[in-house]
Amino acid sequence: ARTHKPVIYLMNTEKESVVPDLVSESSDFVQLVWGPVEPTMPGRIWAPGCTVNEGWNHLYWHVRNGDRHYTYLVFVDDDATLILAAGGGEEDQEVLDNPWREFERLLLE
Image (tube, rainbow, N blue to C red; front, side, top):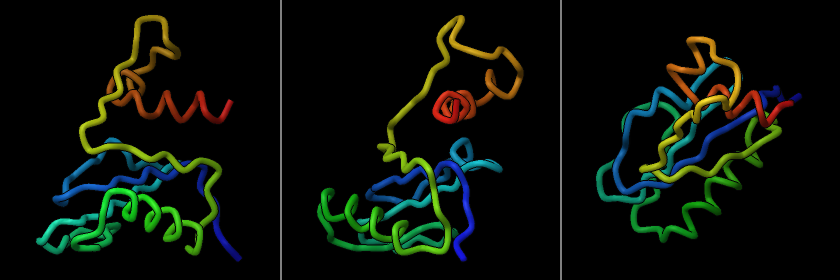
């Protein structure tokens, strides 16, 4: 049986990067690296030389054929920044520290 988490963030980049804001109890993160240097961290897929479109498709099929079911697949560019606008939601410290949690809360409402 497949386990469930509400959200997975999928990133397609030339170089491996650390993105701790995208991982939580309710979200996972997978990064496809298409550049020449093989990634070393967990949750990374190495596909050297693939195109951007091939990378997004590879990430989709990786999740689709995986052990976990997700309600939302969020495709994120490596330069994406999420900023919480004033009055945009709950003003607790976690939301102020990491607006991605508020984004997830709004998705799941």
